[in-house]
Amino acid sequence: MQLYQLIYKSDASAALDIKLLNQFKRQIQESNYRKEVTGLLLFDGVHFLQVLEGRKTQLKRLYDAICNDPRHANVTLLLMEPIPAREFDQTSMQIVIRKAEDLTRIIDEVETLGELLRVGDGGETSSVILSNYYHMKEGLGRSPNIVKSFLEGGWETTNYSGMTQDEKQWIQLSCSKSELSQEYPYWFAFQPIVDTEKGVISAVEALLRGKEGQSPDELLNGLSETQMHKLDVESKRSAIAIFAEFGCDTTLSINLLPKSLISYPEIVGELRRLAESLSIEPSRITIEVTEQEAIENYDSFIDVVNQIRANGMRLAIDDFGAGYAGMSLLADFQPHKLKIDKKIVDGIASDGPRQAIVCAIMQFSFRLGIEVVAEGIETLQDLEWLKSVGVKHFQGYFFAKPGLMHIPQVNI
Image (tube, rainbow, N blue to C red; front, side, top):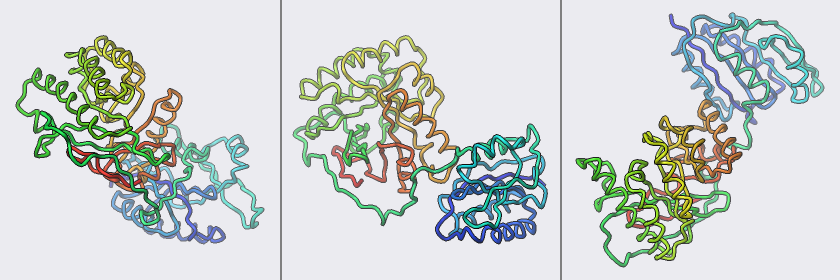
């Protein structure tokens, strides 16, 4: 029988009576003993962290039950993977509790991470005591590090509320023109980027479309690489001209393939001159390059990036985290804006590894002065969690789907 280990974190809800923790512990021990599930439950007075070991199907049922348990809120899966053997015996399911003010002393005094703590019955003055000594062996896996991170406050939530959409007040915004003055050779769908802190549309992204709404892949299908890059640069002239007709004071983001910029480096200056002729300041134009396309000639691309900056325009890395060149792009080209890919953002409210990645992105972006945009927002839960770690700019169907040849209204 293949054993699995599941680790989750959650917050104690108002439905949990702290005075009944010992009873809660006994219920967990008895239930898990019958199901041949072992592990460790930690509680710091606000947050739970639990390590569970057993059969995969049994662990999934337990986790689903925990997600639906009213005593738990903001349940977040941190790890689910096979293990060669159990790390805990059948009687090891203990509640570990600490006081925030005692944390440093406890970490200093405990020689072995696996020492378990439990709360006494002394009411508000209940002291934290050491008990049930357990040695966590070297080389067991990631669980000792996750437990240590929890004890040091590494998985504490910030101000994530887990609210529902009905509890949110919405502000109606609009930035569009009903009719365009002329026909354009290339059509675009425009999707807003929203600043939820200021309550404004901070930018719109121009997405290449066919006149029937066809995707870029459909339009580019059958073209040679040379034809594709030529269409890529030529179409952006239409994007800027259409945007100028809307009369917005937001910025415009346009996507250009790195190879297109290298093949047609003169397009940067041409787009700047076109924008200025239409009374658009170059600083309101952001050129997005996707992380998914490998940059084969760094020296040539650096020249293009320098041209973008010299012409007063901005650079953004799109789909960050979806490909394999992201960290190099970030270190070498220092963009004004970084857009976190939907694959990382989707479901982040309950996904521990993705949360850790976004927290790291936010930390180095803050230090480098890079604006972060979270792409692909579709649920209020994901939005609220991202806001809780400092993300302010968002894009996705939650706010508005792209509008073909117009900028749609958004709710924020």
